[in-house]
Image (cartoon, rainbow, N blue to C red; front, top):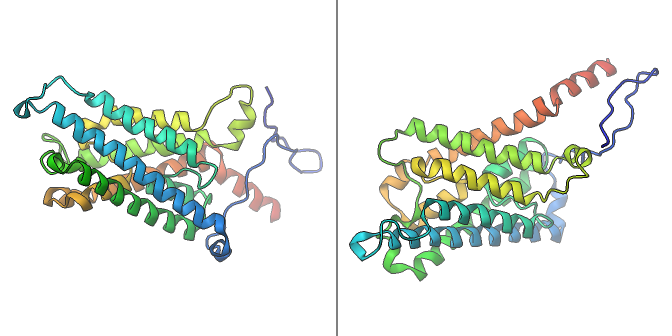
Length: 286
């Protein structure tokens, strides 16, 4: 197994590494606006988020109907929380696999925000990705309401709200930690240093990302219904348009963005020692 060598040579230069970090994305890159690949990526994010919300919210509504005793259902029937978690995690695995080579497969404003902080995407791309993700989420939930109009409003529209017995502080903490797990996994699965070091262990990046979503849903569905994706929460809130959904909606933006910020800082400046490398570069230029 090859390893990165960062020892200083006698001439004071660093030896070559066995991996290459991509150059940081510019803060603002107007040249992107002239490239078809940029708009293709935005379309891919829109469609992927639409499909993500359609399948997952439809699964949530279907389970609640199957488990509704008053409607002739069985309280132990349906896919259960485990099945809902699989729906979210499985769709992320599928959609990241399909769109990674086109847009990077973000499908989540919190992921986009974290990658922007790490200089993986420009500000223009990050903003337009988030807009496309939110619009795709609205359309995806809109399709669910159109196809399941008899059950959609009855079972809460799949919106993220605080569960009984939990306060907003608990919900915010759950969203922060859950999003940290997701974004940290995204950074780790796509790290070029890891790919070089563990090249003998073939790992499909969408797989651990999907599993991270699955595991977080298992833990936080009983608390907030699991947001960790502001577009998912926003799309459901817009279509359902309930007072409680909007009253607590800030949790599902603030929590994921804080979690993404912490994950980006931890990976870039602690695990990748970005701060130490920057300090070393400053000293060498002094």
